[in-house]
Structure formats: C-alpha cells, structure tokens
Length: 154
Image (cartoon, rainbow, N blue to C red):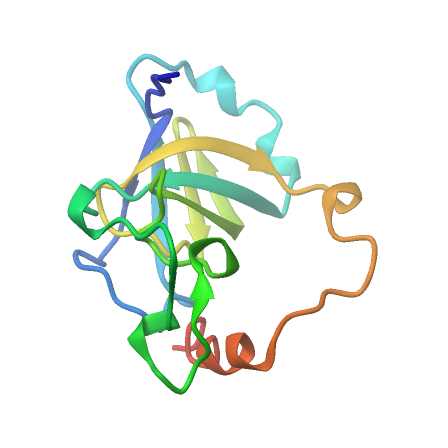
C-alpha cells in the first residue's frame, strides 16, 4: 500500500542543520503551502499550543532504522527500538512536536520550540486541546529524562 501526502506548510527559521539540543528558544514561522487558503487558519489564534507533524525530508533512506539502537548512539543509554525513541531516522520520517503559538500573520504561524530545521515540510497542524492530553500520569524511563536535559534549553 502506498500513500501520497503533500505538505500543508513549510518551516522557516535560523536552524539550517540538525542539532540534538537547545530548541526551546527557536522561533519559527510556518507558512501555508500555496494551494491552501488563509482561511485554513481561521480560529487558530484562540489556541495557545499546536501539534506540528512534519517530514524529516533530509534523512536519507540508508539512515532509516528499523530495529533497536542506543539513543544518540550513547552506550550509557539502553538499546531500545525505534518506536521507543523520538529520533529522526524513523521508518516513515515523521516528526511531531507541540509548540507554543506566538502569533498568526495572515498565512503564517509564528511558533516557539519547533525542533524542525529551515525548509522542513509540515504534514499537518492540529490545535492542542486539553481533552487530548494524557489523562493519567506520564511515565518514562530515566535515560530519556537524562537525554532531554538540554533539548529545550537555550
């Protein structure tokens, strides 16, 4: 089965290359694709946060990982499967990040904390609603907390 998905928007920011940390203060603009009308964003300014689904378009097929590995290739972390981590070398090359919506300018969203580099295609934009957040306590292993210590820092 094959699927064809077209970008709904593109990311613009100062990050030109993939880096592992310090995404918290990155301000990005997300500009709608030419085939979409401005009204696609009607009402979005009433939300404080958005979920951005994007495509890791610069990951080559040879780098895709299907099994287990040490996150960031750090042997201090346990070897875990591709679906137990959030790395870019995923089978379908999809990323998902919850961002703060800073401003809406006609066909452009200004967001904070998007960990996608300049030019990244956006697959979908969804408003964050409290009712879709986890209903119970979030559980995660200690290694992931350690790995993320500097991810959102300045």
